[in-house]
Length: 347
Image 1 (cartoon, rainbow, N blue to C red):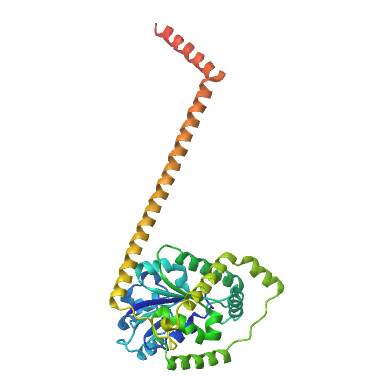
Image 2: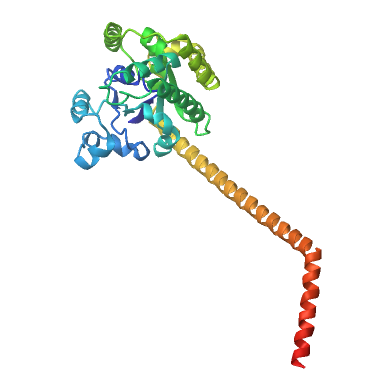
């Protein structure tokens, strides 16, 4: 069984996307099961017993999602059939390298949604005083901040040198034409998405559209502020990556993809090889960061030594100036006269 983490900006469809994935009998994606302990997550957290282990000492520090949700989710799954298991949480986007280092070989699906829509959703929720998360807060500012941070962390993670397996899914691509996204997701997860799943997704999409909330338009001032504040460079990098994924998919022949989204067959040996490679990459990455840390410490010590040397030189220079001054010479004469006078008294 492989580990799968779903993340992206808050209010970018991660919850709904996980619900779609969970229609597949070979996929189990929890909902923020380990929301408050992301740095601790490893493969041992994803047994059925562990997921349902809501003992008080764990419940208070791991999640705010009720036990009943996960009990119902797991009741629909056959452990023997599962190929993928994991968790979804927007907050994981801040700690992608740490999660990967704890779980070498894990895969990640990250969502992208335009900043204007994310901020609008944040802003709308913050206007509801009963909203536990955003009620009464500055949703507009929080939305911009969260979105920018996630775009940057997405790019940094993929370019980190860890060589993680990542798929970025566009909100509009998936929720407005998810049939077209099936080959992309099928190839990434190496799973077949049959007609029953396609049908389930179509029904979910109809419900999704029917329940969609009317959007509140921004003022010209707000639009200008978003445009000024958003990280255009990070967003363009993410958009280019999404386009690259589509080009790569188009590069495969119909036989490779299959008209029914047949997955590629890798085999257990290749999976082991990928995991071993991921472990080696992790070790290399850790060593490189240790080296960088040591270099940084050495550089700080060198700067400290240079400052001390400069301070010492300054003190020497000041001493030389004092010794060459008229006051110093006068003190010297006074000292000699005093010594003579003391000598005469003793005599």
